[in-house]
Length: 430
Picture: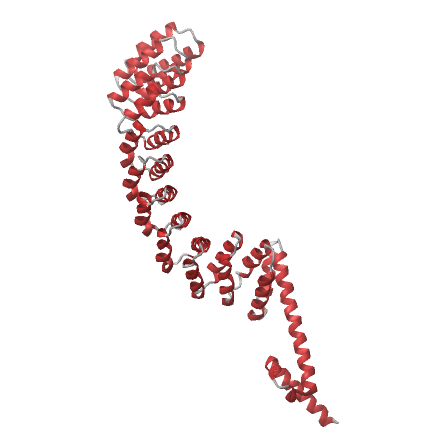
């Protein structure tokens, strides 16, 4: 009897030691005892799988980050193969987009190489959120096994798959994909060319700037050219200024608009004259406004004829005010004459801005014009701007003229302003 018990115990120990490998033994070899032990082992495996599944579901539903990390730490204690199997099973069975995204985002924390191909296949999902999540996950756990899948997307006859490839490059760009990516700039589909340009821009792939400039100049589609121009500006491509100076004169209004915007982003003084020249012939108010803003930010003017044309005759009040301001950066006699004309404008705000700009000339000629403004029956707003410019010019000889104005000024507010100016001159010069 003892011998039989000893034999059974030995069999049990041997089967336990064999573990999962014993399951592969033929039934004729196993016998009733080993079948019992295998049944218990199988049950233990099922319990383990349920435990892993429970932890994973806890991770997916937990909103507290600290508690979630505790669950992640607990999950790492289980065999990686079993954990990976559970993640893949969940991913395969997910139906809702939000669930799929949540699974992908969390499974990316576990660097299981078996995830690569299932995730790569999701790069062509019809749902943008899934594609984006898969690309992010592959950035963490991916390896060279995803390359064939990616290259298959590039060469797909389905245009949308080629677009999905470009989207993936925003996360997975690798220098080995550069020829495939830029090769799509020759794709017949304009949307694909635009997606490529945006990808090059977002990833700041500066080695592609020559191709981008070429697209800006010669692509057959204006939308593509606009995307290329935007990329030149976004990447601050100073060498692309010559291209922008040409496209700024394009017949397409939107091309011109984007060109000026890109020039403004680069902010080079080399663009001052091209901008000023364009202003003379531009008929779109939005573009005129952008050109004036660009000149204002550079504090330069170049050819003043465009600004002169606007400040003396444009129907748009805002443009006249801005032009009067920018003319103050010129210092030329032509600019001075234009500002004198602006002092006759029907709107007091243009006249006031002209007074402000005349203060930049720092000359007796400018002083004489500004004193003429003060002697007129002009609004206090305009006279205040003229007085401010006189004080900026800071000429000692102005003191006597200010005294005379103070003696006959009727407006109490402006009289007080004259008083302050006179007191300042006395402190400074007497």
